[in-house]
Image (cartoon, rainbow, N blue to C red; front, side, top):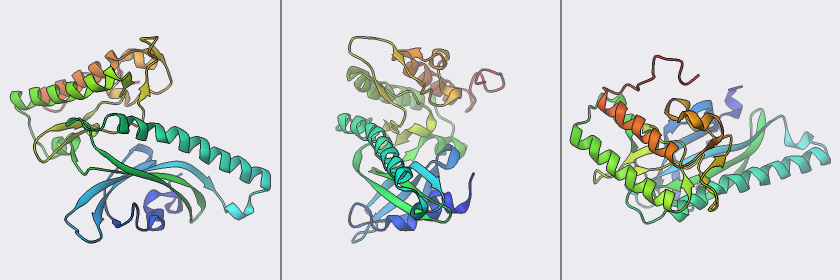
Length: 255
Protein backbone atom coordinates (compact mmCIF):
# COMPACT_ATOMS: atom_id res chain seq x y z
CA UNK A 1 0.00 0.00 0.00
CA UNK A 2 1.22 3.48 -0.83
CA UNK A 3 -1.30 5.68 0.93
CA UNK A 4 -0.18 9.22 1.58
CA UNK A 5 -0.46 8.79 5.34
CA UNK A 6 2.16 6.05 5.24
CA UNK A 7 4.69 7.72 2.95
CA UNK A 8 7.98 9.15 4.18
CA UNK A 9 7.15 12.49 2.54
CA UNK A 10 3.91 12.83 4.51
CA UNK A 11 5.64 12.45 7.87
CA UNK A 12 8.92 14.27 7.28
CA UNK A 13 7.56 17.34 9.11
CA UNK A 14 7.69 15.28 12.31
CA UNK A 15 11.47 15.01 12.09
CA UNK A 16 11.80 18.70 12.98
CA UNK A 17 15.35 19.98 13.20
CA UNK A 18 17.50 16.88 13.03
CA UNK A 19 21.04 16.60 14.36
CA UNK A 20 20.66 20.11 15.84
CA UNK A 21 20.82 23.11 13.50
CA UNK A 22 20.14 21.02 10.37
CA UNK A 23 16.89 21.59 8.43
CA UNK A 24 15.29 19.26 5.89
CA UNK A 25 14.82 20.74 2.42
CA UNK A 26 13.84 19.14 -0.91
CA UNK A 27 13.95 15.43 -1.75
CA UNK A 28 17.01 14.25 -3.68
CA UNK A 29 15.93 10.70 -4.38
CA UNK A 30 13.86 7.72 -3.31
CA UNK A 31 14.56 4.01 -2.95
CA UNK A 32 12.52 1.24 -4.50
CA UNK A 33 9.25 0.44 -2.73
CA UNK A 34 9.16 3.82 -1.00
CA UNK A 35 10.97 2.41 2.05
CA UNK A 36 13.82 4.93 1.87
CA UNK A 37 14.40 8.49 0.70
CA UNK A 38 17.21 11.03 0.59
CA UNK A 39 16.76 14.73 1.37
CA UNK A 40 18.91 17.82 1.27
CA UNK A 41 19.94 19.22 4.66
CA UNK A 42 21.02 22.82 5.15
CA UNK A 43 22.61 24.34 8.22
CA UNK A 44 20.40 26.78 10.12
CA UNK A 45 23.09 29.47 10.26
CA UNK A 46 24.78 28.90 6.90
CA UNK A 47 22.49 27.66 4.13
CA UNK A 48 25.30 26.97 1.68
CA UNK A 49 26.68 24.37 4.13
CA UNK A 50 24.85 21.22 3.07
CA UNK A 51 24.70 17.51 3.76
CA UNK A 52 22.37 14.66 2.84
CA UNK A 53 19.76 12.92 4.98
CA UNK A 54 18.95 9.28 4.29
CA UNK A 55 15.64 8.17 5.79
CA UNK A 56 14.93 4.45 6.12
CA UNK A 57 11.51 3.17 7.16
CA UNK A 58 12.15 0.44 9.75
CA UNK A 59 8.65 -0.31 11.05
CA UNK A 60 5.24 0.67 9.70
CA UNK A 61 1.91 -0.26 11.26
CA UNK A 62 -1.61 0.68 10.16
CA UNK A 63 -4.07 2.03 12.68
CA UNK A 64 -3.78 4.06 15.87
CA UNK A 65 -1.12 3.18 18.48
CA UNK A 66 -3.59 4.08 21.26
CA UNK A 67 -5.79 1.17 20.14
CA UNK A 68 -3.11 -1.48 20.75
CA UNK A 69 -3.59 -3.96 23.57
CA UNK A 70 -0.79 -4.09 26.17
CA UNK A 71 0.50 -7.34 24.63
CA UNK A 72 0.40 -5.97 21.10
CA UNK A 73 2.11 -2.76 22.25
CA UNK A 74 4.90 -4.77 23.87
CA UNK A 75 5.34 -6.77 20.62
CA UNK A 76 5.44 -3.56 18.61
CA UNK A 77 8.10 -2.03 20.86
CA UNK A 78 10.20 -5.20 20.66
CA UNK A 79 9.86 -5.16 16.87
CA UNK A 80 11.09 -1.55 16.78
CA UNK A 81 14.11 -2.38 18.93
CA UNK A 82 15.06 -5.41 16.87
CA UNK A 83 14.82 -3.47 13.60
CA UNK A 84 16.77 -0.56 15.10
CA UNK A 85 19.61 -2.83 16.16
CA UNK A 86 19.82 -4.39 12.70
CA UNK A 87 19.68 -0.96 11.04
CA UNK A 88 22.64 0.25 13.05
CA UNK A 89 24.71 -2.35 11.23
CA UNK A 90 24.93 0.04 8.27
CA UNK A 91 26.10 2.83 10.57
CA UNK A 92 28.71 0.59 12.20
CA UNK A 93 30.03 -0.43 8.78
CA UNK A 94 30.23 3.16 7.58
CA UNK A 95 31.99 4.17 10.77
CA UNK A 96 34.60 1.44 10.28
CA UNK A 97 35.36 2.76 6.80
CA UNK A 98 35.80 6.42 7.68
CA UNK A 99 38.84 8.27 6.40
CA UNK A 100 38.99 6.67 2.95
CA UNK A 101 38.66 9.13 0.07
CA UNK A 102 36.57 6.63 -1.89
CA UNK A 103 33.97 5.84 0.79
CA UNK A 104 31.00 8.18 1.42
CA UNK A 105 31.43 9.94 4.78
CA UNK A 106 28.98 9.00 7.53
CA UNK A 107 28.28 11.92 9.87
CA UNK A 108 25.51 11.06 12.34
CA UNK A 109 22.30 9.06 12.84
CA UNK A 110 19.17 8.94 15.00
CA UNK A 111 15.76 7.26 15.22
CA UNK A 112 12.34 8.92 15.04
CA UNK A 113 9.03 7.43 16.17
CA UNK A 114 6.15 8.87 14.15
CA UNK A 115 2.36 8.85 13.99
CA UNK A 116 0.74 10.14 10.84
CA UNK A 117 -2.41 9.59 8.83
CA UNK A 118 -3.37 5.93 8.86
CA UNK A 119 -0.41 4.56 10.73
CA UNK A 120 2.61 4.81 12.98
CA UNK A 121 6.15 3.45 13.12
CA UNK A 122 9.86 4.15 13.42
CA UNK A 123 12.34 5.61 10.91
CA UNK A 124 16.12 5.73 10.94
CA UNK A 125 17.76 9.01 9.87
CA UNK A 126 21.37 9.04 8.69
CA UNK A 127 23.27 12.23 7.92
CA UNK A 128 26.08 11.91 5.38
CA UNK A 129 28.01 14.04 2.94
CA UNK A 130 25.99 15.34 0.00
CA UNK A 131 27.13 13.92 -3.33
CA UNK A 132 25.67 13.28 -6.77
CA UNK A 133 25.26 9.63 -7.73
CA UNK A 134 26.53 8.07 -10.94
CA UNK A 135 23.03 7.11 -12.09
CA UNK A 136 22.02 10.78 -12.18
CA UNK A 137 24.94 11.46 -14.50
CA UNK A 138 23.86 8.63 -16.80
CA UNK A 139 20.25 9.82 -16.86
CA UNK A 140 21.44 13.21 -18.08
CA UNK A 141 22.90 11.50 -21.15
CA UNK A 142 26.50 11.75 -20.01
CA UNK A 143 28.84 9.47 -21.98
CA UNK A 144 32.04 8.44 -20.22
CA UNK A 145 35.42 8.34 -21.91
CA UNK A 146 37.79 5.40 -21.56
CA UNK A 147 39.95 7.38 -19.13
CA UNK A 148 36.93 8.29 -16.99
CA UNK A 149 35.73 4.68 -16.89
CA UNK A 150 39.18 3.56 -15.75
CA UNK A 151 39.05 6.22 -13.04
CA UNK A 152 35.67 4.93 -11.80
CA UNK A 153 37.00 1.38 -11.71
CA UNK A 154 40.21 2.30 -9.88
CA UNK A 155 38.45 4.37 -7.24
CA UNK A 156 35.77 1.77 -6.48
CA UNK A 157 38.39 -0.99 -6.47
CA UNK A 158 40.22 1.05 -3.85
CA UNK A 159 37.01 1.23 -1.80
CA UNK A 160 36.39 -2.50 -2.18
CA UNK A 161 39.98 -3.28 -1.21
CA UNK A 162 39.35 -1.55 2.12
CA UNK A 163 35.95 -3.20 2.60
CA UNK A 164 37.24 -6.68 1.85
CA UNK A 165 40.31 -6.22 4.04
CA UNK A 166 37.88 -5.68 6.92
CA UNK A 167 35.77 -8.67 5.93
CA UNK A 168 32.92 -6.50 4.61
CA UNK A 169 30.90 -7.34 1.50
CA UNK A 170 28.93 -4.50 -0.06
CA UNK A 171 26.59 -6.76 -2.12
CA UNK A 172 24.76 -3.92 -3.89
CA UNK A 173 27.19 -2.16 -6.21
CA UNK A 174 25.35 -0.23 -8.92
CA UNK A 175 25.41 3.32 -10.36
CA UNK A 176 22.94 4.53 -7.69
CA UNK A 177 25.44 3.60 -4.97
CA UNK A 178 28.51 5.16 -6.59
CA UNK A 179 28.88 8.87 -5.85
CA UNK A 180 30.97 11.71 -7.28
CA UNK A 181 32.71 14.36 -5.19
CA UNK A 182 33.33 17.95 -6.27
CA UNK A 183 36.96 16.97 -6.83
CA UNK A 184 35.98 14.24 -9.28
CA UNK A 185 36.59 11.34 -6.91
CA UNK A 186 34.23 8.37 -7.05
CA UNK A 187 32.95 7.03 -3.73
CA UNK A 188 31.13 3.90 -2.68
CA UNK A 189 28.08 4.42 -0.49
CA UNK A 190 24.84 2.88 0.79
CA UNK A 191 25.87 -0.14 2.82
CA UNK A 192 22.28 -1.06 3.62
CA UNK A 193 22.58 -4.72 2.55
CA UNK A 194 26.24 -5.18 3.47
CA UNK A 195 27.34 -8.02 5.68
CA UNK A 196 30.51 -8.92 7.54
CA UNK A 197 32.21 -12.16 6.48
CA UNK A 198 33.30 -14.62 9.11
CA UNK A 199 37.08 -14.55 9.49
CA UNK A 200 37.07 -18.36 9.38
CA UNK A 201 35.03 -18.78 6.22
CA UNK A 202 35.23 -17.37 2.70
CA UNK A 203 31.55 -18.06 2.01
CA UNK A 204 28.46 -16.35 3.35
CA UNK A 205 24.96 -17.74 3.60
CA UNK A 206 22.37 -14.98 3.49
CA UNK A 207 19.15 -13.91 1.86
CA UNK A 208 20.41 -10.45 0.87
CA UNK A 209 20.90 -10.26 -2.88
CA UNK A 210 21.11 -6.53 -3.53
CA UNK A 211 19.80 -5.43 -6.95
CA UNK A 212 19.07 -8.42 -9.24
CA UNK A 213 20.33 -6.83 -12.47
CA UNK A 214 23.78 -6.28 -10.90
CA UNK A 215 23.95 -9.40 -8.73
CA UNK A 216 26.22 -12.35 -9.48
CA UNK A 217 24.36 -15.65 -10.13
CA UNK A 218 25.67 -17.26 -6.95
CA UNK A 219 24.18 -14.43 -4.90
CA UNK A 220 20.77 -15.95 -5.56
CA UNK A 221 21.87 -19.28 -4.06
CA UNK A 222 22.76 -17.68 -0.73
CA UNK A 223 26.36 -18.94 -0.70
CA UNK A 224 29.06 -16.67 -2.09
CA UNK A 225 32.16 -14.61 -1.28
CA UNK A 226 33.75 -11.23 -2.01
CA UNK A 227 33.92 -11.95 -5.75
CA UNK A 228 30.25 -10.95 -6.06
CA UNK A 229 31.31 -7.32 -5.48
CA UNK A 230 33.92 -7.55 -8.23
CA UNK A 231 31.31 -9.04 -10.57
CA UNK A 232 28.85 -6.22 -9.87
CA UNK A 233 31.51 -3.57 -10.43
CA UNK A 234 32.34 -5.29 -13.70
CA UNK A 235 28.73 -4.89 -14.82
CA UNK A 236 28.81 -1.18 -13.92
CA UNK A 237 31.97 -0.67 -15.97
CA UNK A 238 30.46 -2.65 -18.85
CA UNK A 239 27.41 -0.38 -18.70
CA UNK A 240 29.59 2.73 -18.89
CA UNK A 241 31.45 1.27 -21.90
CA UNK A 242 28.29 0.14 -23.68
CA UNK A 243 26.20 3.32 -23.97
CA UNK A 244 24.63 2.75 -20.53
CA UNK A 245 23.28 -0.70 -21.40
CA UNK A 246 23.78 -3.85 -19.35
CA UNK A 247 24.77 -7.12 -21.06
CA UNK A 248 21.65 -9.02 -19.91
CA UNK A 249 19.08 -6.21 -20.09
CA UNK A 250 16.87 -7.94 -22.67
CA UNK A 251 17.20 -11.50 -21.33
CA UNK A 252 15.55 -13.38 -18.47
CA UNK A 253 18.79 -13.23 -16.47
CA UNK A 254 17.41 -11.16 -13.58
CA UNK A 255 14.30 -13.32 -13.28
